[in-house]
Image (cartoon, rainbow, N blue to C red; front, top):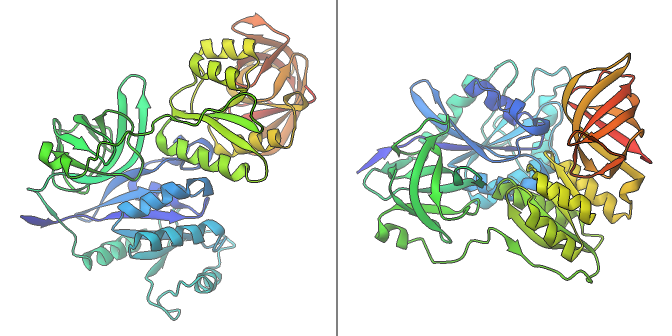
Length: 476
């Protein structure tokens, strides 16, 4: 027996064009503040109520490294919303998003955002969209659009009305008797809870205890949480949720089926999921060798995309890539193969840091993918770590005498030496300069520390250092 179901809507567009700000206003929650650098770096799904009807939004990342994830976001959606900023117009990633929409074969409408900006120019956006083959209603075409401000909320209710009107024409239904099915949006390996997967249910009812499978993996649903984090016994379309029970992290974009053995046999083909995809190279091979670590599969895919892009002009080889924090085993592999370790949104445990320091293995860790891209570009240009270093401030503990401060941070690039001079950067802008008075690690005075090491510093600075700052050293 079929019933009408709510739509799943993907938000796509160029980075910094206001996608997350728009969703923040819609769901009255601040997601951007929880994202490093204010950039959405993993696919999330959120359910809202407009009037008496539900809409599930898939918030897809805008940075070019996440092209694969954007495509998956469009795949799961019934409708896409292409976001274009009124103060910026059509950009390369706007065109990438259009390509993803076309590939997925889903209908779409356009939201022209940031109309509250003083330099907003909606007419210019219309012209640039027309040049890209998108003809809006009232501008010689049939693509529905609306001008909105995620900051003030102007036009947002009308946009939601248009979304519901557009999806009504699609005649979306679901069958409560059918085996539950849907799409994997994210996956990660949690040290405490095991494998966790973010999913959207598209048909049927998903229950705790169901067998579940994708084409490459299977398991049993042990836990269900809705998008707010509340425990649930069952989920109906189009509910976004976090589930536990897969035997390994499934691939982002895979379809899943749940139910009994017969139901999952229709989708599962017994392939092995490449959680740790290894193409180990010998230490004698030419080129920069890399070990990639990330917090979840989508992040790992994105990091691999950055590496592939950065290494177009110079030889690189990925020794291994896997999900999870950096441990001793990663350092031992790096030492035996001569590899660098790149960590995206992960941490290195103390034993790994100690071993890396002893074996002279370089670890570069960042929560923003641009920083790893810059680090790799520098290494490919042959810039040695001694020529410069970067330290990310993690904590500010207090003040010393005069302009002295006590701070803690992690070295993300290069080697930092005691008494080194530095410049203070905030939001990419230089705001001051200073010098290290004393350098410590594990409460012991040290003369220098390398990338990946967390350190404590007594510094003398012309600017009051905050947790948002980065210290950059030249010739440290």
